[in-house]
Length: 471
Image (tube, rainbow, N blue to C red; front, side):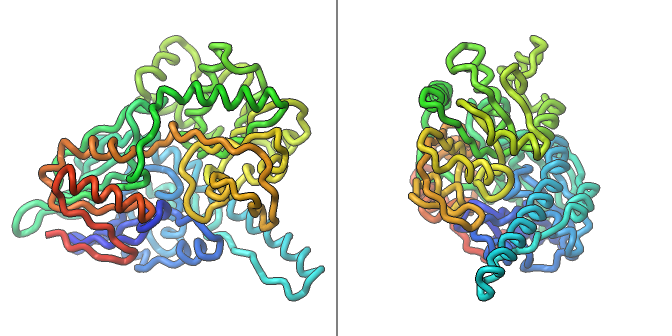
């Protein structure tokens, strides 16, 4: 068994690891690399292997940095099964075509802008990047999804089985163990996907994995500790109240999957408790609307608190002051509203979609607040806003950041250092080596030291293209 680390090495995006076992080639995830536009396009468009020679994909969850390059894989010749949970498959049925649509719209917008620039300056550089794949390409990979329930052992190649458990990161997310037989007995490789946090709204807490010989572990927050999830309602209420008091708007970039639903549930609870003013609240994302329907269809992944809403006949994702927006004209009309309001829109890292238009219209008004609710990768617009850079580029145009920037890290779907160490404790003794991925260098290095100190394990931080031979 050999594993080559192609994505999420030294960064948190583009998760993809190539597993060669028993003469077959499997991919653990096939995510979009996100960052500088041209660099991201080159990385995503060109696989370092022949896509047609990939036999199957084992997909940990639906977030675009884990699933978003599947259409490119299919476009380049992949036709094998994609093993994942039913909830992840349903989410991808909305998310992958939406990813293609956003790429097509952004490319069209950039082309129009470049055309206008060329009229003024014929020597202007061409900043247009074509879409990686079309909506049709995205639709073509959807029949390849092969839903597998948690905990069920499934043969994914001759002599190779895989089994998953709930990673507690988002709806349908998995951690997995791939087991293969060789002449000296079984070899078991665990892959964490993204590990969630105990106590997050809506979804169940992460399960421990069964025993394994090797572990590929995410390290997004490997150098820090989160604040208590229990404080998040107080903090959100404070942010909403002070923004409304100055007559401002609250603009919330949020992942359409998971984060949006968490925020809606928390706002529902705050309104029911009369802890925030009764301002209009909008979820402006066709994808988030579709995803919320997938959440309603997969209540088997809900925690007990969220199930209580259902038992009482209530909708955890719907209340009087909330309105879901699909139509483009309705989205544009939000700019004409007067008075305080709250707009949740994708994408979560501000790299595409309607959030860019809301930021462009609200970023320079000091009455407003931009609320960052999740991890922002290097070189993304979301990271620049989170760092409170005085000037940020939107659609290539510099804008002054005058709005308040607030952060709500308590909702992070990624376990912190202590939570990761606790998650691996039940199976740590049997591990021969741990590989840290999905983290920036400082985060991975800090987690490596913590694992070595607590469990006395060999820890590697692979670079892109590095190969590990798992005996």
